[in-house]
Image 1 (tube, rainbow, N blue to C red):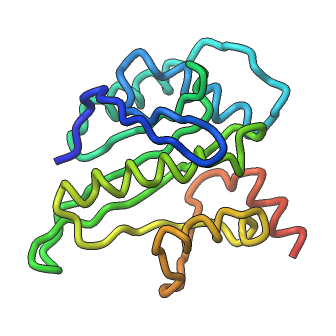
Image 2 (image 1 turned 90 degrees about the vertical axis):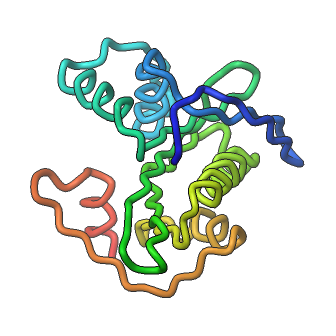
Length: 180
């Protein structure tokens, strides 16, 4: 089982030393800053989390099968990703792991941060007994290095992914649809 133990793994990349650890309840604002910086790299402001974000984060922190990771460089949070392990009756009852929301601050991309996060996450999935790790990456990332990263870690583009947005389609997805 993957837990929220706050344990840190030191991952040294060829480019930048990076610490990857699991989040703690007080890390919500750091995760939100990474997400905000993806939308606007100049935005380094700290805003107060909404009530909905706080309730969602509390629920995430209570889930034993969900882990959020933070990558830090020089004590600055520069990346995050989420791992969910799902009990499964297939594959000899080995859990399946799902990776979501792999985000690295723009000025730290292609420095090994995402690789460090993914290595930690995959190690934890392996330790949890997972047989399969599923990851969806939008087609718009085919040219920005994300798909190369995933294949370098052993992921294979062997399945066709489908999404249905039941509420709001993210702006980045809408933009990618227009660009097609």
